[in-house]
Image (cartoon, rainbow, N blue to C red):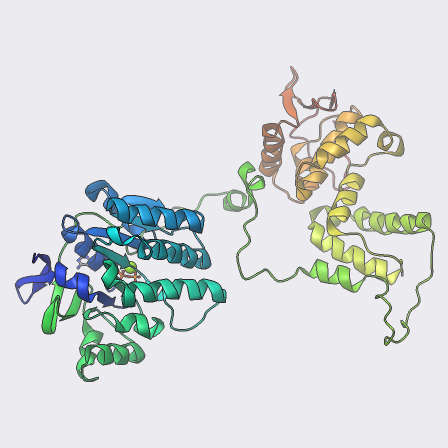
Length: 503
Ligand SMILES: Nc1ncnc2c1ncn2[C@@H]1O[C@H](COP(=O)(O)OP(=O)(O)OP(=O)(O)O)[C@@H](O)[C@H]1O
Ligand SMILES: [Mg+2]
């Protein structure tokens, strides 16, 4: 059966693409970013949806909009490889069109997911080898010409699956349609298997040269790709045209979720812009920290901590350490640590320095005083700072309520412990509730709004209950400790010595 789908216009006449021929001869689309490749793929998919099963490997999640109009099943790539292979297999079995969206996955996960899915389709039982158009947008990601930052096995898996699709897929009913921004970035063996080409605007000589080679054109002739407009392509191949034919891709029915950026006037700058940007949302504290490859450089604090470790492990070939540190008792060491800590915290400016900065200062001072033994870790340091800043006296520190407060504080993140323990200390000692300004300082900021947000956050976590007395003064209760602060004026100013201003 011959079905010619309408791709747009070729010198005023309809430009047709023979779908059956395409199934046997595959297609490569090339054009720089914004040349209209994804639009072209969409036109092809929309026009052929009723004729052939389609599978789209979609790195940006752009094609999921085909689902409403044409019934494509949307498969989210965030699954195990076994699941993806199973779904791919059943997609062939039931002949359902689908979009595999890889949006949100990192590049290596995208490669692994695409490989699992393509292999799942490739490995389908012979009885399900019905024809499928397999469209891969941004194909250079899945079949890169050179190794990149991704692991070797992810690259091999993905490249292997793409090679299977383009080189060995035809017999199994798989017809690859691949699009790439840069021909030079696409593995040669994958590109070479396509017999149909749609070449869009191309700037770089190296891509132009590859295009000319693939199309069997003179390199000077290929210069025409430089001047092509968005949506204009040169078509060549058995399913398109026997000679290079300029065509203009027609319109589409569904829309891409992402489109080209448009200039928009900036909003008027609000007054308290710093507050808006730096005030954390309570949810931020709950979100796990996402670490992205490559790994972050080691913080200076870690390196300093390592450098300041007392004596390196003795090794037979090592010379004697130059400085032999005197042995001191555990109590004496603890006393010196506490002394250095309080030196730092007694500085009124310390409240507005980050813990990491204070920690560096602490480590340097320990080295200057030649305090032996391993240095305190940063979390332990933060904890000591928090306890010290809470201003707890020796008697309270020994009480059962305080030890409950300490164990509760372990459930909040390091950076919030200071604030938490300061509130807890006020509650355990029955002191007035600290003002916003005081809470803000304990968090290392001047923002009263941020202080109120922190209270809101602790309250949402269920660790405190905030209420007011009849005169409007604030009280913070700790249900788990069974105590609460005395009423305190939330708006009272904070004196820079750390004591609550007289009420
Ligand atoms: N033939 C066309 N008719 C109308 N609009 C088009 C046409 N081709 C592309 N566009 C529009 O131009 C913009 C860029 O097109 P598209 O997203 O298809 O580019 P692309 O080549 O896929 O770019 P990238 O490589 O960055 O993904 C889109 O907003 C698209 O709607
Ligand atoms: Mg695109």
